[in-house]
Length: 424
Image (cartoon, rainbow, N blue to C red; front, side, top):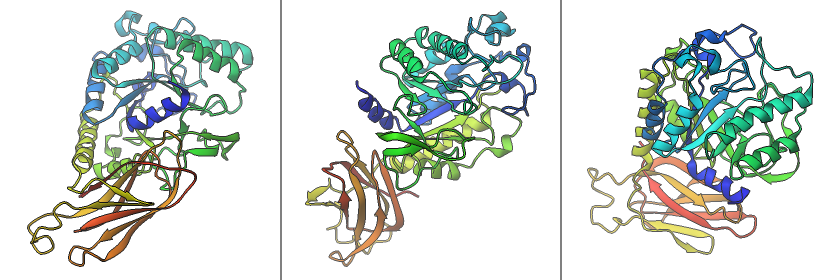
């Protein structure tokens, strides 16, 4: 599978779950870069159950999962021989435990794609110095070597750019090392390293309705003050990462869990705007997902399934020129426009573009035909890009048919699918 095919496969995953877990999970109230010491002696998740995490993720509809193997604090969730700050220095399982192993095994058991997060930067008492660039890159590659050679096939490697603004990595050397260890891996990183997946530019879970997949600049760090200009335009699908609570790691803040309604909106404005949705839950100091978090994320999964699991009864799209028409199969029934007891409402059209030859559609319109005056149409939605998927919502109506008109496109285009829904 070449790089472009891997990127398209990534878009088909659509929805992933992030698990921020580490030494911070045992120090509530601590924050990134606060220089407060977090001794490894407190790391002891006596009820750790990565299978619980992944069972919940799968039930909620996620197709992939990502674990923070090493965050900015430098603590490694595997027994790294290149660090004196890892699970090997903790009382958990007498220093013989390996969270990465348990996580990877759980993902494979439940059929989720395996993602590993790694922060190149780090701070604090146990950190490796940035003063010698080559030695630090050696350390970086050595730790990646442990992660990418000891746990089988890794589908997704997620680099956090935060904190690395002042260090110039030997990109070519690092990318070559990763490719040698995991030839089929997909990366979330600075695209000047290797094109993979780009950050959407916020941690709120939203993508713009206009969302081109070929870009010439990207956001790469929350600490950066402007976008990074790329040497040339490149195909880069985006991922919208976000938090279930107000913090990435578990903390004493259950009251900040977002509502199902807000989370559902984030799903519709990430996956529904042609990007992937990556939502974070922080396992607690027991090593379990808290009950309240589980309840909310399962509510979200239920809402997504109820809303987009079963399309309304419309015909397959018929294409004439640049117009696709879908007709309601019940339109000719005698009571079509008069019986209020028959729920024949719709308020959403979902369109998927065939991206095998690139993203082409630049603008489109959706027209709905009225229930009684079936020959009359009204404009209900105007959009720009389509990409992997675009969710187009408007007010509920008893439409007899819909027309999707492709107004402009860059080269040839193809539409994979069009479906109609009623989203309550």
